[in-house]
Amino acid sequence: MHRIQIIDSHTGGEPTRVVIAGGPDLGDGPLSGRVERFRTGFDAYRSGIVNEPRGSDVVVGALCVEPHEPGCIAGVIFFNNVGYLGMCGHGAIGLMVTLVHLGRVGPGEHRLDTPVGVVVATVHGDGSVSVANVPSHRKVKGVVFDVPGVGRVAGDVAWGGNWFFLTELPGEELEVGNVERLTDRSWRIRQAVNAQGFPEVDHVELFGPARSPGGHSRNFVLCPGKAYDRSPCGTGTSAKLACLAADGKLGEDVDWVQEGILGTAFTGRFRWLDRAAGIVAPRVTGTAHVIAEATLLLDEGDPFCWGIRAVTSES
Ligand code: PYC
Image (cartoon, rainbow, N blue to C red):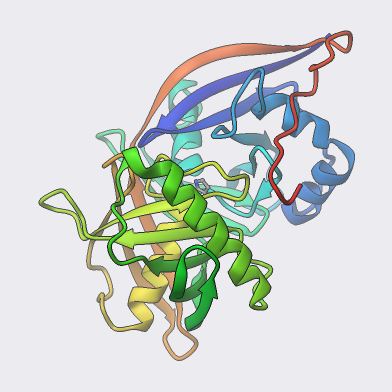
């Protein structure tokens, strides 16, 4: 019987399952190498931890490991129903709130080692958390293509710790009652943009007008395993900030309030790292709540010990 100790939280509605003990031993070295060891040698753990019957398509796992980079309080590898994430903004906020809950950290700045670089999380006195994310940039502006069942789509490809295609679909209501339609449209867009020569894009982000008085924009984000992000997506907000910066639509250190599909919000802002190259340092602030402490039991005699593998049309 394997026992895996977890703490669950949600950040703006999007769950994070932090693995505190009992996860796979990935050895040491850079996190980019350890995520590959996770993928090739221990992928059953990923599925067992986040997939049904213990989890669901929407759960994002966060395996806490010893950091490699100096000065980091922890290393973290984020994973979901179908694979691994470079970074995860809502997950980093959830991890910090979990570490506060455990009494391991208090208010102040804390460095986290991830497979795509070091991020700096600041725990504020009011419990909110800011994440200074990895350098982000827009790769291509204004990619235009036809999407079967959707029509002509134009948008940007950008990196915010994961790869995104960002677009607006005029007339599309970004509300939770429409998630089936939004999921279908976003999935078609993802397949089409991948076929356009951007196979790296695994998240699709649709934008529309904000609904709240202080908001600047609302989004719907489709994740790689076809689950939609219940939060405004931290890495997606970082990619958005890179696009806004490149277009001169947002100034340095100016707040951008990004609503997600449930109406919860992250506040983003950026600093230029290299203006000529379009590279920004994004910072995303949000709140999370711890909702469960548990021990997962993995019994090899159980036919679904290692989870029910998520099936998408690509897997
Ligand atoms: O907040 O960066 C994020 C994220 C990525 C996938 C789900 N949430």
